[in-house]
Length: 152
Ligand SMILES: Nc1ncnc2c1ncn2[C@@H]1O[C@H](COP(=O)(O)OP(=O)(O)O)[C@@H](O)[C@H]1O
Ligand SMILES: [Mg+2]
Image (cartoon, rainbow, N blue to C red; front, top):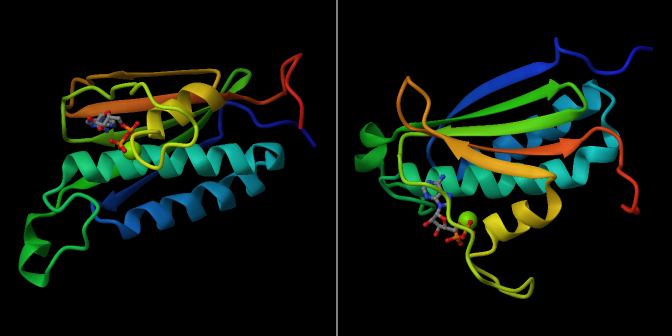
């Protein structure tokens, strides 16, 4: 069996509400199992969880609070993309907010404000950009093969 290649791309759009986080996590797990990237399941699930939580929070209007029925017509969307590109799995999440993600100065014990910190620690690279279609993309990369010095 050949390894995952350029054809390995999955994009899914979700309504920007808290349930999107669990849906995106399950999508990522399912997708990576299909692609045979079982070593990345745990770290990718964590990255997707933090990226989509932030995207839902930024897109609102209710952030991570469950919207009331009267608020359902105002919900935006967020989009998840999983893409194998060369030697990495790139996870990207689109949202409608143009403000950048901020790496907060917190320790690993912090319960809030550590999403980007975790992405910074676990991923090989991360960043954001403003696509021409509007909004913003926050992305991070996980190497397909463990690099020297990494264990587990
Ligand atoms: N997708 C995003 N859109 C806009 N701002 C973001 C986004 N992701 C992160 N941020 C900013 O970066 C900060 C740090 O994010 P994070 O480390 O996940 O902590 P928390 O979400 O608990 O605040 C957020 O408080 C927010 O100001
Ligand atoms: Mg967060």
